Image 1 (cartoon, rainbow, N blue to C red):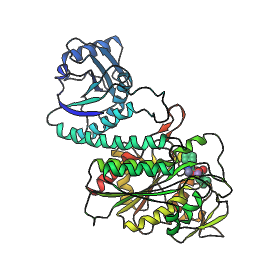
Image 2 (spheres, rainbow, N blue to C red; image 1 turned 180 degrees about the vertical axis):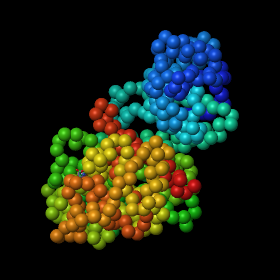
Image 3 (cartoon, rainbow, N blue to C red; image 1 turned 120 degrees about the vertical axis):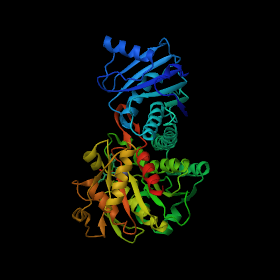
Length: 487
Ligand code: BES
Ligand code: MN
Ligand code: ZN
C-alpha cells in the first residue's frame, strides 16, 4: 500500500482527483463548517432526510456527487477528534469502500483532530487493518482489494507532521502484519524452524544479526527448563537471537523476550479438546518480537534492540516431562514441574537468564502466558507487570499512545508464597487464584540482574469466534516503547 500526504485543506476537496474521498466528520449537532459546497449540500440533504445523523459510527455513501472530482464520496462520523475515534471511523468507511472499484482513496478530516502525527499514524494503521487478509494456507481467500494508494489530505502547516506519523504508521503496520501472518499460520506450518527462518529472512531484509541456537547449544548453556518443555516433541527446538543496532555499540540495548510455543497441547497435563486449536497462537509473544524488530529497524530508530525467542512445541509423549519432575534452570535454580501446561514460564525463565549477557537497559518479556489474565482483563488490555514504576509507566503510556493499551497488575511479595515446593527451589504453578500474578512472580525470580517488565497478552494476541485470528498486538505498544527509549 502506497501512502502520500497531499496538501489540500478543507474547502478544496471538490478538486481532489481520487477514486474515492472519505470524509471524516465529528459527532455533534452542527454540520462541519469549512466543507466544500457540494459536500455540504449532500450531507445537509441526507441529514434532513434522516439518512445519516451526526452520531459516532454513522456513515453515508454517495456516488458521483455533482461538483466533486472524486467519483465516490463516503462520509463517516467519528465520536470525537481523538486519533482512536478517527481511526475507528475510517475503519467503518473502508468496510464500505474496500470491496468496490477504488484504487486511489483520499481521506479528509473535517474534524478538529488532535496531534496531526498521531492521527496520521492511526489512520494508516486503520487502512492496513481493513485490507489485511490471511492467505498463506487458504487459496480461496478473497482477492486483495483493488485499493493500492491512499492520500491523506492536510494543510501545508500540518504536512510535515502528517508525513512523520504516516511513516511510523506504515512501519508499525508492517510489523503488525508480520506478527499476524506468523501467528495465523497453523502449528504444522509455523514450527520453531519456521520462526527461525522468519527471523533469518528479517535479518536479511532489515539488517539484523541473527543467531539460531539448536538443542546442543541449549544443552551446553544449561537451559534445563526450556529443554524439559521441548523434550516431548519431535519438532526440533530453536533459540533465536536477533539484534538490531541503531545506536553506538556502547549503548545498552532494550531486550524483548517472546514466548514461542508453536503449539501448546498442555503436554502430559493435557488440555481439553475445546478450542485447543487456538493454542497455535501460543507463539504470539515471539511473533510480536519479530514484528517489533521489523518496525524499529524499518524506522531506522537510533536504539539498540535485541529480540530473544525460545521456540518449541509442548507435546505429550513417552519422552515428555512428567508432573513432579524437577529440572535445573540456566540460573541454577531448580523447578518442580507440577503442571506441564505451565510451560511458558519454563521456556521464558531460561531466556531471561540468557538476556543478562546483553547488560540490558531493560528487558520486557511478552507471552500468551495465562488463561487467568484473560479472566482478569478480557481482550482489551494486556496485563503489565513490573516492580519498576518508571518502566511500568513508560510501557503503559506507550500502549496508550499506540492505541494498544495495557493495565498494570501487582507483584507483591506475598504472591510468591504460592510457588513454594518441598522438592525444588520453586514449583512452576501457584493455585488457581491470582494465576496471572503467580506466573509473573515465577518469572520475576529470574530477573534480578536488570530492569524488567512482563506483558501477559493471553487475552489480546488473538481473537476467537467468527473473527478468529491474530491481532498483531502488542507490536504497536512495543514499537512506541522502544522508540521512546532511545530517542
Ligand atoms: N498458553 C497457555 C495460556 C492460555 C490459555 C492463553 C488459554 C490463552 C488462552 C499457557 O501455557 C497455559 O496453559 N497456562 C495455564 C497455566 C496453569 C496450568 C497454571 C493456564 O492458564 O491454564
Ligand atoms: Mn500451557
Ligand atoms: Zn502456553
